[in-house]
Length: 399
Image (tube, rainbow, N blue to C red; front, side):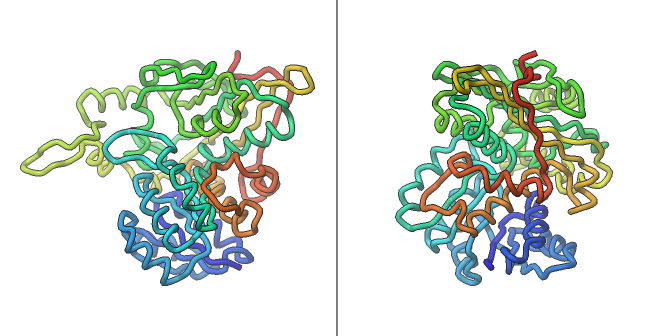
């Protein structure tokens, strides 16, 4: 029996709250907080089986978060707020000796940098405080790292080639929308691509490398090479990797619209002066685009995310493909969300559960692949994200 404080009331925050509420034997008390308390109240009202306590908090304000933590004394804080706020929330957890879990790495507001170095700098302080920080426990990052650790533990002596493949074959019916925070999403895909090969990073222009890749139950979809944050920790924690890449699908209409927005300056993250006020174009764009949490109703199709791995077992070459497909309509029936929010929120709940059950609890700051993958893999299907695997078959990414 434990208390959980969830900070963030967007689409992912809603899923995390619903899933924690469905596990009362672990999460005996749930506090949901956000800058916008009305969003918290709406989520709480949608959960008929449990009472959810709601609060207002500015996650950028460390002292305010410390006061909220001390008011309720939660056992763990699940951070599904903005990545800009990761360090402030880690500071609050450190001050109160509260376990911490997030789903995305810290990003500075003024530059699109996706690196773990700022959070890894807390390792010694968290270790000395005797508390656990779990970094990147969504799907990607998150489940993709756990899939890799599971493959390394059970199927390989060495993994040499890793391709993470992420397809959203859903249709939300909107002219243009992002499946999670538009500001974060657009920053991520307009940066240079990057992949690991032969001990160094190879950088490419944004979305320059692409090809069709086959996804189970979906078919071929044009897939673009991006840099994604889990590549940084995976190449560090699995040093036998000769190459590691990340691929994501985008429709032609999405790419064309994004190109126009870039060309007219709407994806800029530096402030401009407009009618005597400073505004950031990308933040303005975020304000006029559909709220990701609103996309669930009427969303059709499914996602497919997985890891395709080549390596060595008992001196012989081996291939391994592990993936999850998640249906938007089924997710909406269960928790009123779309599958991109669901695939992020479910792992966050399960990761927190494993910390509270002492299966993932150890002092320090860790990426998910540094924990034993087995307890997670045993339960993730039960909580809504079943996985499939193919062994020693041709990898779709290599075709």
